[in-house]
Structure formats: C-alpha cells, structure tokens
Length: 416
Image (cartoon, rainbow, N blue to C red; front, side, top):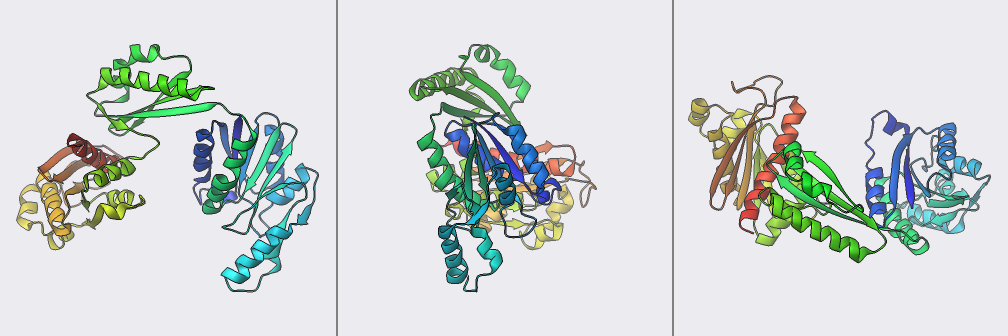
C-alpha cells in the first residue's frame, strides 16, 4: 500500500503551529508496511482540498487527512468531503449521543447547536469513533483510493490512528513487511564512515537499503528491508549488522530502534539504577527539557540548575568567584566545578554541566564565540571536553545539547 498524508490548516502554512501529526502517522503506517509517498499541507479552502483530492485519486491507495473538522465556519473538511463524494451531511445518532455525554456529562454545561453539528457526517462514510473528542473520523472510498479524515488535535488524531485506522488496515489489506534497524555511531563524520563501509554497502542484498542520518557528532546508519517473508528479512538484517560491526566496532555505541538519544540514555540509567542532574548555562535547560520529556524520567532525572548568569553560578551553584576570575566563566575549570556541585547538591550519580559562548556577543567571557565546555561528573571522576561549534547561536546550543547526552551515553556504556 502507498499513502499520502495531507494536513489542512492555514495555521500550519503561516508557521503559527508545527505539523507533528504527519510524522506520527507516517511512523504508524511504516510499522505495518504501508509506504508513505509524500506529505503535503494545504489551506482551509474548499478548492485547494478538492484539487488535492483529485490529484491523489488512484495514484495512492490511502490518503489520510488531518484538520478542518472543528465546529467553526473556517473548518470546511466535512462539507468538502460531501462535495467530492457527491454526498450529504446527516446526523449520526451514535456520534450525537457521545458528544452530548461529553459536553453535558463531563464538562457539565449545556450542549450548543455548534456542538451538535459535530455529529453531522457524510451519509455514506464509515465512522471512526473518537472517544477522546467530539469530532469523529471518517473513512470513505472512491474508485481505488481510500480517503480518511481525522481531527487535527494531536491526542485525538493519535487515538484514532492507534485504535481505529491501524487495526482496520491490518484486518482488510495485505501488506509487505518493512523492517528497520538503525546503528548508532559516534565520533566520526558521515564521509569518513561512508569510506570505511563502502565495500560492505556495495554488497548489501537488493532488498536492503542503507540511509545515512547525520547529526552533530554522530551518524545513524538505518537499514531498511522490504519483502513478503518477515523471517528472511530479519535474518538478513541481523547478518549484515554483524558484518558491519566487524568493520566499525570502534565507533558503534548502540542500536536505535526508533529511539531518541534521551530515551536511550534513560533506559541505560534505569538498567543501572543510576540518577542524573544537570547544571546548564548557555543551553538554558534544554538538556533537562529533553531528559524530563521521557515518560518515567522521574526514576532517574532529579533536577537541574539553570545558572545562566555568572552570579547564579556563584550564588546558587556555589562556584568560587576566584575560580571565575582566574579562568573565566567559559572554561573547563568552571564547567568541572558546576558538574561536581550540582551532583552534590542533588545527590545524583551523574551530572552534566555546560558553559559556553553561544553568541552573538561574548558576554562575561573573552572566549571565542562558539566555544563550549561540557563536563560530566560520574561515579568515578569528572570528564571535561572543549568544542567550538561555530555559529549561528541555535546551532551551538543544539549541538552542545546532543553532544552532552552522547558523552553521557558513551560513559554509561563503558560499564554496561
């Protein structure tokens, strides 16, 4: 099966909100062997929607649309569906009962006509029941293409994808298997890694493809196998991963089964029953934000001190002013002291500290713009590393954030 994901909403096109729905849907479809051909965003305009539907008709098997199902006048998806399918809106009793219960029973307020209108759906559509919201999903087929309409609210969309759409596709359609395996490498750039594994890559089976996914300081190598025999695909993937490991074992730090580095680090900390804290200056709490966003992070992440200004480092973290005066606030010595002090303050096994000059001006330090010091306090000592991530400011912050977690991951893996 081939699919296209369509997001509807002027707020996406003008950059007012970021489309996260498409990524979630694409991952869900990929897991069941549905190939996503493209993702497009269009405005809340009937003509644009109709044009998109016409262009996609019979070119893909599945079109999943999110957005435009709200109760206000600018949400036109349902009416546009009716026009495209030559249908009319009717009240669905089950949806109306659900909306009434939600508004009057849960929110404890009288239901309005606008709320009731959420129960209007095309007469020939298959209803996808939305138990967590008022707008139902709609499943309609024209010729060789299924069109599915979902609410744009992320948690409602996720519920319908997981509970309604994926099970229905699995029941009704035969699909190939798509197996992914991602190898995490650390410490060498994309071009150097590619040179080292060129012969191995050239000898991959035709049904296995390799993709390079570079990030600051690391490269992920994603193997993708497609076919009808799952056992054959998995065996081939594992065999080629073993042969790859023999070539670049020195830079492989793990396997990313669709995991972010903060998730991988969290799992390692849980396995070892260890805890982490952070003391952040120019990264402004971004490392703490990534760590704490992982479900279950309270088992290992104890907290952070965002000591952005020099006086915060002195007054909150207890960094000696003499140390700052002697070595500068952007220095290995200050980063080391920050890591040790926050580790002691929050009583954790590991502690990350960052201090640097992200720009655009030098601030309290004479260090060159882009200069960064990262310190990691471990149960066995303290590691400090210096980097220059150049410019712009956002690049410096993002690279330092990921690099901090990579240093932590690398140290934990030494004793796993």
